Length: 175
Image 1: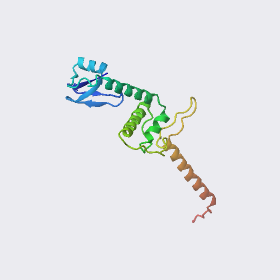
Image 2 (image 1 turned 120 degrees about the vertical axis):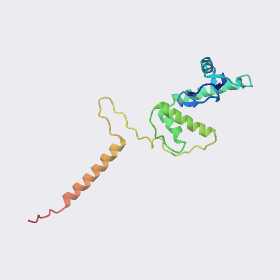
Image 3 (image 1 turned 90 degrees about the horizontal axis):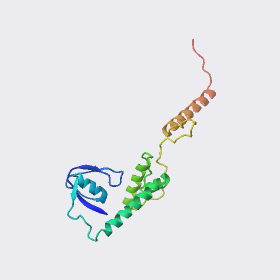
C-alpha cells in the first residue's frame, strides 16, 4: 500500500526507478510503504494529512499493482517493441539504445496517450537510430553511419574524377 508523505528535507527521488526528480521541502508525495518507512525513519518525510486513502487502501493497492504490472511489462519488452511505442509520438527514437532509457521514453509516450494524445502511425521506428552496430566476435568493427556516408561520397567523387581523367585529352605544355 502507498502512504502520503510530506518532504521535510530535500532529496532526489526516482518514483519509477529511472527518472530522478528533486523533491523540495513541503512537497506532498505518495510513497510505497517500505520506502515511506525508511524515509520517515531517517527524517526525510513525515505522514501527510491524508496519509490513508479514503477507500481503506483498496484503490492505492490496485494502483500499486497496476503500476508494478505496467513497469514489469515495459521492462521485459524488446528494444523493437519499445521503439514501436516511442514512434507513436510521431518521431522515431534517436537517443541512446540503452534499454532503461528506451523504457523511460516508452513510458512517457504511454502517459501522453493515456492523457488523450492521439498516437501517430506510419513512423518507421528504426529511422532515427544512428548508433554504430556491434560486430561479431573477431570481425572488424563496421563503420558508423556518418563515416559510411562520408566514405560513399568520397568514393563517388573519386569515381567521377577518375572517369573525367580517363576521357580528358592531354594538354601540351608550353615552353
